[in-house]
Amino acid sequence: MNKGVNQSYWSASVELPKFPELKENTDSNVLVAGGGISGLMNAYQFAVKGYDVTLIEGNELVSGTTKNTTARITAQQGLLYSQLKNQKGADTAQLYYESQMSAIEEIERIVTKYNIDCDFKRTDSVIYAEAEHEKSVKDLEKEDKVYKELSIDGYLSTDQNNLPFETAGRLVMKNQAEFHPLKFLKGIIEVLQGLNVTIYEHTRAKSTDGNTLSTGDNYKITFDYLIIATHFPFLDLENFYFNSFKISYGYGLVAETSTPIPENISLSGYDGAGLSIRNIVDKSNALPLLLFGGLSHGSYEQKDMDKQLDELEHYAGQKTVNEKTLYAYQAQDLMTADSLPFIGYFNKKNENYFVASGFNKYGMANGVLSSMIISDLAEGKNNMYREMLDPNRKKGTFQQLKQHLTNPMHVAESEIKSMTESHPDFDTLELDQGEGTVAKDGPVKKGVYRDGDIYYVVSNRCTHMGCSLNWNNDDKTWDCPCHGSRFNYTGKVIEGPATDNLDTDIRPYK
Image (cartoon, rainbow, N blue to C red; front, side):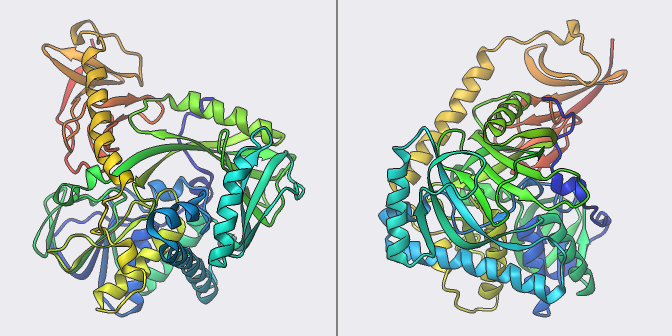
């Protein structure tokens, strides 16, 4: 599959308003860095409480992970509750379920209050075991037992429930939801404009000094409260966030189908290819649309996007009869060791710095939840979820220790691979238009991209922590396998944690 463009259905079907770039020093009571769902919702929660709010986004609003999502708003996040009960106790498992349900209710309240047309509807969320994996049903049974202990509204079933493919079992969680995320956030942006929130695009957060933030263009914004909602926290080195997350890449596609799934459910695979499947409401399309997501892997596993999407298309075709693939994309998620997000105080020394990150693929609910928690903390209110999701919580678990050991190991493996690979000499390089590669420029490796009659020659070292970069031919980007930073072919940072651009040299094409 070669779609040519890494584009989701959500972003293709909605046009968002544009905002200017910051060109002067300014100040704001509340400064939000990041224009995805968590950033926009934090801006909303503070604005409705009467705060003067400014939001900055390094690219364009909703141009990152938020647009590349299945947009399933659910407390059913894999077989999470048996894991949480075993690792943290039943009380924590119960509290996390309640937190996710409160976020769903908040979204529904906002949709109703502002009459936002975003295809919001309540659905049942379903985890299914593949028909050939009957042993997996035992894991579903263990999770179902915890559901009953925690009074979670759900049940285990072997009934096919009109599914177009066979399963060995299904674990259902009732009363979850789904929506069109960009339609929802377009409505939120309109609300923010009505509340006089100031928004700047193409304005990247770079560093802070006390109550002053510096942008990539060295403009200053002074603030009373700072909310860091930049997917990967841009100040990660101060709190060692780079070693707290595992970077996961996943893939999605939208296809026309003649065999849609029932309207009142969304699906998530437990085993096999682990496909998530949901309907998309689009009355303008002649055939029903299905969104498929899956095939997740670590950032250190360097996999070709086209091949991954071909494989996803293959697995999707085993589930339903699909006519044509319309959209395909890659998404990046941050995974925490204990499967709980980081929401709250950024660190222990700055009580006016807050962070929302590490949503473990479930950013729709957790992005909204972050705004509810952080706005409470800023006002000195007690929030019942604060301690559970505190970014500075004790992480002395086996899972956290394992992550602290494996993350550096993967970095080392990536560097060894980079050092042992052979690369062409720049002087003899012949690239086709739109092609990029790593080349030797004297004793140094550089990234090279051909754009017409010129070569963009960039440093091959990430400006975050110096890892070697890989060329992503699908997106025309330089990607860091260590911590997920990405740069366009001119060397401009487009996704953190890196905040500095690559050194770039423009040379003539020979």
